[in-house]
Image (cartoon, rainbow, N blue to C red; front, side, top):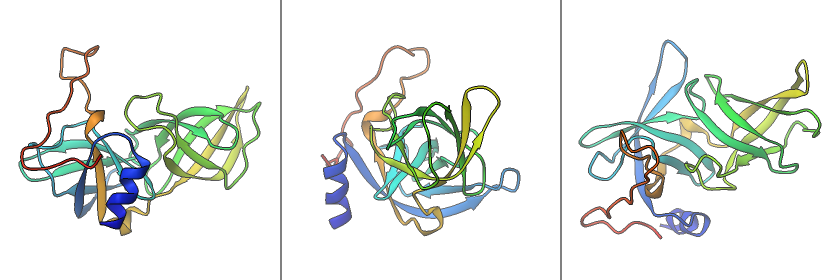
Length: 191
């Protein structure tokens, strides 16, 4: 209950708490996938998923009583982020296992240990949520530097997550229209 109240203070959008019921590991990309105990009555593919320590990922697939979550470490994952200290922005991509990478302009110095957080520019993840910490900085050819990022969330220890209900993508064929999600019957979203 305490964690739910703390999350309510951090996030302005409606959220739905979900228990992590399983971890699955892909033999192809060596990434973990978590399974939530909420299904298609409440959750839609593309919705953002957070933990009390930071960004988890987004809902990938939904079944009657469960939802698969694509973690930010998945090579298919992309999140609009910034270095909290300098506001240098980029798109974080999953690099498999327990790491991500992001390229930012080299004109802004970035240090190992810098916090990476969401920008809110992708209209999926609310602004200012921790994504991870910089573990390595590599100067690239040109005016870019590549940051290796260790996620803020320990996925192997995650037992509770929150689905952001307001972050549902538009239905197919309506890319410019965002839909309001109806409240789940019998459930009161955390506000």
